[in-house]
Length: 444
Image 1 (cartoon, rainbow, N blue to C red):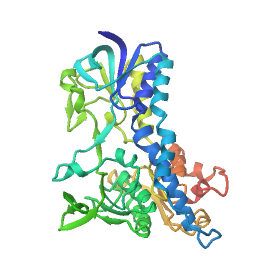
Image 2: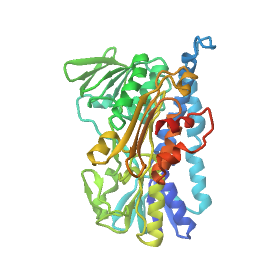
Image 3: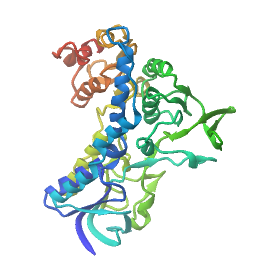
Image 4: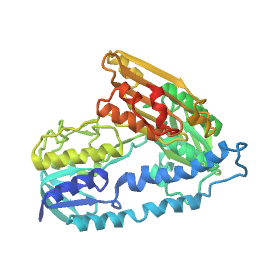
């Protein structure tokens, strides 16, 4: 049996941060993963997705500028775009493993299972540890209906060698919105089945409404309040059946219906780690309430928004608490969230409905602004914002943007929320002009 100060299960962002910090403090560390090292974001999520978005953005920009000084048609070569994505993803596992070795962190490949409160087995070996961190990320929520075996995950979508002509996405969140924009601009016919009343339920409904203009322009068939209940294999592909006797023919069906912590393989009973509603029971220090030797971070912890910066933050929090004793709690104030549609939609802080539910008094500004210079110079018809400023304190409570550069500009609002900057502070800041950020003074 080998003994370590820390064993980390997983190799994504949270795992990388906590293992590096604890090892730098002179402690012995082991990491393990049954998948290629690097985690979801770098290999199967935000990074490869954004590389595909780059191709779609180029097509969209050329289309918008037709008749405004740009001529000729561009198209996406899907195999070449996937090859471009692989220039980033393919080297990641080897680089990550080399990085662990350079730090003196032992790496193991295989499925990790707890064999006791302080022990894990992997690769036929048992490892004992003073602390264990669960950083296994998330997995697609299992879908239970006839024909569900025909569905592919978002992981597989990002590896497609060719793009089928007819694609159905089940779900209406980030994955469905982003993948539908990529696929439609690559020439696919796309249908989205969404159980909720609208797409992107985590974002402001007014701004989502403005963004839906883009879905319509692309010919994306969005069907809200529709639950898929059966998928049928036919001679011509697949037939997707949903409520209300709806049926859509498809060549490919993609799971975009949400994710949950990936915990099933761990044997948490052996670890004496309790779970409630498929979530680890953790205290305010990201520590198991039933086994103080075990911590969790990132999507596996499911305490903050399921975003890469949150995973990194959790890793820092857990490392501090392991090294110094429980002294640091996670702080999720001012974490921006972006759906990389084209144009993107972004949000930070409270939504209008959340602020009203909390009984806060605030001033709200909301405008659909396609005539502002930021949008006009790009011939973009979708641009708008909504901001919430607390009365009395002048604090930014929430900011919501859809349109060009929203994914970058939202970070300044996040900075304001996290560091208690006021609307007056933003209005009196001197920002480079003309840029997307220079619109901030008019938004608050």
